Length: 615
Ligand code: AGP
Image 1 (cartoon, rainbow, N blue to C red):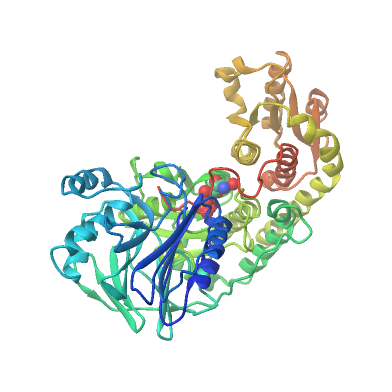
Image 2 (image 1 turned 60 degrees about the vertical axis):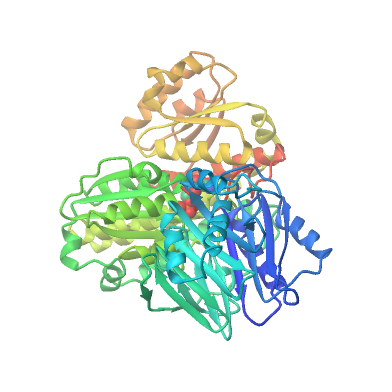
């Protein structure tokens, strides 16, 4: 997604802007740009380049532009293809105003027509550019003022974070936020503006997270903050206590591989962190009162992509362990659906990054019903933590690869653990059951790693080169194995670009069976419960009877399935409901090796970003 970075102060800032942008690389991008006010001429000077940040850096190395007031941006295309013209900053007709934006201006078409009719000439296909012309239009008639900003921002529909510089006001930067994240780092006689404090955390720890629907006029000596209706707001800064850690792949070829191998430790760290929470501390951190905990009637889980699948699996945890009716919604669809909360409903939004726009929007809808919300995230400084009444943290460590691996298993760990804590609070299980559950998580983590170790060579030498030649795949599972199949299919699509579709195994005969032939391998995730296993075996028989090719993830001793499959991976037994943790590492490794054979850019697959901050 787009990243916004700005600086206003007493230093030449090009280098620190570039450094800030590199730290925001995880957001993915296709072009980048830099602009500043030239201290001698007071004119805006800029540079833009298509492609990754290095292209912009190389271009800037040929130029001498730098200044005390500057903007940097990386773009993830929404409106208009990736080109230097569409890269930010964007300008008004005279290039007296430069601005950068993250988000989408939904009414840009209407504004563009209005501005065109007034004589403005556009130079890009972006939705962003209209805002530069809107400022130009208004500043042609009157001076910069609170009213002027308030009027302009109130006209913009959609989601946005803006930083704007103007030749006419060399000591001012305008910033604004609606829905998209934006924060201001407060230094001594200098301010840093960013989509994420990570970009400036080594320069200052004092951060103003811009309130939703607010704008600010920044100068080196301070911040004047206003709501969109022009009311002055007080400045409440937070002091952050994390540091930027340069991530490196260690001995691994890709971050994804490193992160696959970190899963066992990530599960253990998450568990240790959770175990350290006394009951009082836990419920307090979740923003709940003890009486509320006992009476939770319904849980709503929200998430996107892999986090949604973690929720789909966790539904079984909350229903089977804590006996709480649980609904799981994909966050990007939630706002179009009816929602019927019961009097004591809990909503848990699952998001590794804590910044996913779809998840945050769904959460805001839930909050409008007065429902208690909790964010389950891996990033303690993220937006979700500020917007929910309670938080629970996974301890996966920084996940760099776009394809989520260790974040997923730590989400499962935290949700499985929480389901047991709720069950204990409700008197459904004893402390000894809770301790056994914790032990079982560690055993599943062990199984995850063991499965990779045992199959590693076979996958690398034989299976990955062979299976990378297929063009499409079907994934099957039942019960908890179905969301696991969905997650596995997503991983295959993301990093190999091979088409894959997951089905509940019982649905095969209701249509997809028509697809079966020797050209479309069927990956089956087995289950330990006998009744489910036998039904799965029947589904595999149906596939084999039609010349299908089966890859099975079977548990030890499941002889019938083992002999039916063309390729089989044997998984050690783990506690019920922890099957996905035991199996997913091996699946990720298998898919990773296929992507390697296909020479894909594994850590940054085309078109994708790590953090998806637009709807
Ligand atoms: C997973 O491999 C994905 N890259 C993606 O589906 C991701 O899980 C999704 O965008 C949600 O992200 P979040 O957990 O940061 O909210």
